[in-house]
Amino acid sequence: MDADITKSTVSGTVQAPPSKSYTHRAILAAGYAGGATVRDPLVSADTKATMRAVEGYGGSVERHDDHLDVTGFDGRPEVPDDVIDCANSGTTMRLVTATAALGDGLTVLTGDDSLRSRPQGPLLDAIDQLDGRAESTRGNGQAPLVVGGPIDGGRVSIPGDVSSQYVTALLMAGAVTEGGIEIDLKTELKSAPYVDITIEVLEAFGVDAEQTADGFAVAGGQSYDPVDGEYTVPGDFSSISYLLAMGALAAPDGLTVTGAHPSAQGDSAIVDVLQRMGADLTWDREAGEIHVSQSDLSGVEVSVADTPDLLPTIAVLGAVADGTTTIVDCEHVRYKETDRVAAMSEALTAMGASVEEEHDTLTIHGGDSDLDGTTVDGRADHRIIMSLSVAGLVADGTTTVEGIEHVDVSFPNFFDELETLGAEVSR
View 1 (cartoon, rainbow, N blue to C red):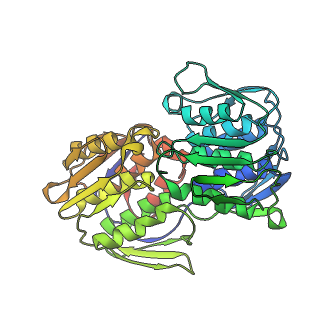
View 2: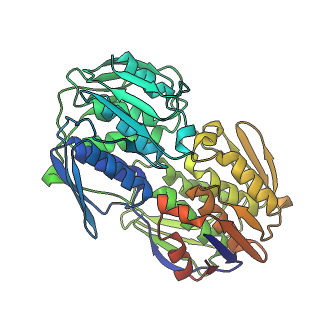
């Protein structure tokens, strides 16, 4: 399915969708528990994959309008009757691969074409260091994977600059091993705030994990047990970034985003980025409300070492801002659902932006850019689709974004909200 977005303005109030990152972790944490209620979850293609995995390991997930009732496997996953299909969800695959290493038997995990091209080698190596079995069927460190145990805990050494999700997976599984897991990082950790999210969720479920001088550690023999048997998911700042960008670029009368409460999410950095660029933005943290209005923006330099999901949004802002926006530390953004650095470079160039792409840097010369509507490939990537749709609001004429059904991964009603806010959209 495609969307035609005509240059238009937006205004009004919009509720932030629940956090995908927190929802994944909460569902799996409830699986590791005897069970729990997860309130205000994001129900999307990705989080459904994590629900299926919990069910594959012997739990169950009952969906209601505003919550999930999860019956867990109490730290002892069964060997699944069938293959665990993680679809397009890299978070699911990495988190539940470590779960498979707790099982007394072999689990097979796979996903779609995109997911089967993403690196899993360091996590497989970590499981091997813990005396589990962890193999890529093609011997290339990519899915399909065959994983088994049971592991008892121990010490592992892994790189930190490929994916923080390896750390998350090991911490979550390590809590229910006998000996716990200590993680030594061989390189600097990229996307570190996502591990902060993990530790925050673990704490809410009664599990202690900590940062150490060499990496992270979690003691074994712990039980997942949230207060009053439930956990509430906060709003998602990755998704909020598109809403705030809309406001800063195309809301002369202002746009208010609700559900934006402070949390460990690194992507809340979008607020600081916009303020540095000169956006008229205020954040009432206690109320969880951000108000932003159309503003004259100026280019800045931004590191996305810890916030890779913000690159597409910042690239669009840079294409409209005066001067030059330089996005640095972005090599790891090439290993997402697609190579997001190349995808944004190619799409914005096709729309008339002046863009320079290097391996670890994306430079957008907004002062030399005039965006015109054209047809752009969403690359089957929810973040590329949403960011290019925001660009369509300020490009002359009509922008056609291809493959919009993939927003179901993280923001299923994105285009409904866009229309409600006044944008001219046809699907």
